[in-house]
Structure formats: C-alpha cells, structure tokens
Length: 145
Image (tube, rainbow, N blue to C red; front, top):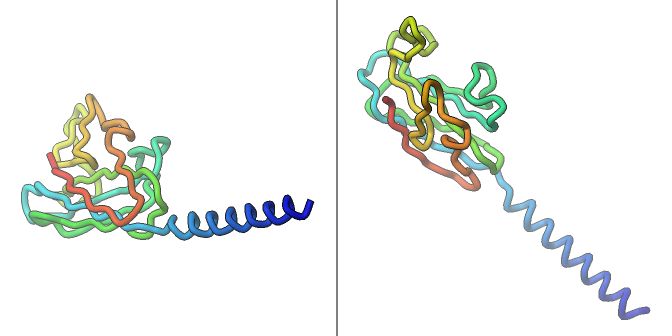
C-alpha cells in the first residue's frame, strides 16, 4: 500500500507542476494591425476587434476599438488579449463623422477592410474567414479597399 501511496503523491505533484506551467503560458498578448491603403491623410482610421462570431461585426460588440489619424500606414494596437481567435474590422473615416458611409443601396463609399483581407459577398465576411489566432504577440497587415 505504501508504494501505491508514494506513486499517487508523485502523480499529483507532476500534475500540479504541469498545471502551473500551463497557466503560466496563457499570458496576455498584443495584436498589432498594420492598415494600408488609406486614400488620403484626411480623417481617421477606425478599427474594431471582435472575439466571437456572435458579435461580428456588429456596432457595440467589439472588445476593443481605436481611432487613429489617417496615414499611408496606420498601426492599430490591441493590447492584453487572452489567447484565442480574433477578427478585425477597419474603415477609413475620411469625413470624420465616426461611421462608415454608404450609398443609398448600402454599399460602402469609404475604404474598409477585414483581417486576413477577408471579403464577403453582399456584406461582411464570416468571422471564421477573418479570424486570426493570437497566442503570443502577433502582427497582421490589412489592406483597405
């Protein structure tokens, strides 16, 4: 019985060490998004980060958002993310009205884009098409169209 007890204690100790190592590796990460293709330096580049298909890309459902001055290469930085899958939606707010302008039938008139340069048909792409895996600090490039 004593050998079983010792083996059991050793197994528990090994499990505890493995769990501590696993928890230590699940650290927060940053996602850097390099946005290219602004048509002009007017207005700002707006970006929103989404953590699930349930909220994608609905207003008010983003886990983080940013507005930066427009430039040839705007860099959005989303900090302290738990490991997982995220998708980014970006647009160039040329006139500074804080919304993506569209024509009368709903087609955007300002440049926009999604992570992984995903494109949708008659609307935004699916979350899975735009999602990027973030396990450590990650940088992606996104092209406005």
